[in-house]
Length: 297
Length: 292
Image 1 (tube, rainbow over the protein chains, first blue to last red):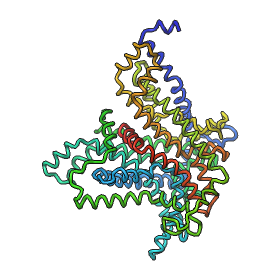
Image 2: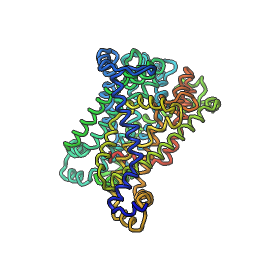
Image 3: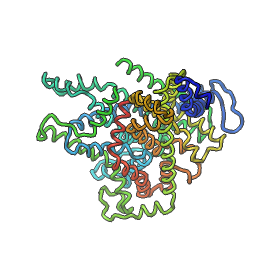
């Protein structure tokens, strides 16, 4: 204590800073960095949880490259991304843009749009799974049948199952994106719009020339945020296909589900770790592209 | 974006917009009608879930929303084996502890990185920020191995430990502490407060909106977390609500009204919380989103 009292103010600050940071630094090293290193290390090893970890070099990556299931899964993951991100952004912007101009019952409408975001993904996956069941159970097919049409195989079809799983994922995320878009829209100074109105610019031109360019930071943020969440999709797929995870015939299986099964059903830890490294690389690329786009601003 | 601007536009979000034209404008009426229809479609899945949970099996597959013969029997049945209470309690304890810890440490680290001048500050900041790029899915395997070695599998601590601090929250808090003027801290220093007291009783009260926004985010994230609790727990008595719900639904197989009741039980608490704290939640998300 006497020693502390003799320190200068800036030296005291250093002591305090590291007092504040000691536990957190330990946390980030032990719970974030060491496991990352361990995952990368494990991707070069073979291990089934029993026995010793055995060094196999690039074998896991070679196996991955030659695994048709991996390529199928890799493709699925990008289909989730490529369909999900534009769909959710366009819909949420459309709603936010119009909701922003609506006064009557404004906060009620906003609350209704936002509500699905707060639901548990697992609970909603089961609700949608029920909707998708064939006649006489599923709501959608009952409705389609009551209109006199042929019922649709949703989750049992290799072509329809993936979009069917994507719909609740998009639906649940809309509320969040609408709020972010509306906050972004409100941040645009009204003077720009007034100037445009005085100059007699059409609404359409105002949208393309003023609103969208000024919303670029918001759009970039949401593109990255939703891309990452679609690339990491798991909860919905797992819960909507529990009888045959990722099925039918792997047509809905995303990368994270493959990782989960390889690690915790097959206990092929090294192979699963190699898959996580691929996921990491993909997400890193997406994040770096974001940084690049933000810098161009 | 400057902080005052962010707060202003987050607050502005809570007020209804002032429409440039009169309310009798036909375009505005069409717009409103379409938006209202869209809003109804958005909540339909939730409405049907609640409606199904109140129906007898014979009525379950009809399209009507209001049950002809409402019943609470599904709820009595689902709650009768007591597991849902347990899962609810587990989720609540875990989400609360994680939120308290993460908000505390994120604010502490954010403050230290923002207000103290010391060598290594930048490196620590970049190091923490870089962990944002590491996906949870990459870490679950090492975390599982670690928990296995240390005996953390199937414990509350095992479920909680990965979320005790968050890089996102640290970054957010650092941004918000930038808005606290150094003069206030200096004045407190002259009054003889130590640095911890200054942080706790001077700086923290000045960023309460950010703290509540962060708390909401972290609580929601932990309340709905699925993959890690699924991996780390083994016994049903330690399941969180989402993991328990999956198990329960798989057991029921064809009794969809019971599955919907379970789903409703998992959803109703968050809906109630939302109705109470709506303004804070929406403002918090807008604020965090604009900062992010």
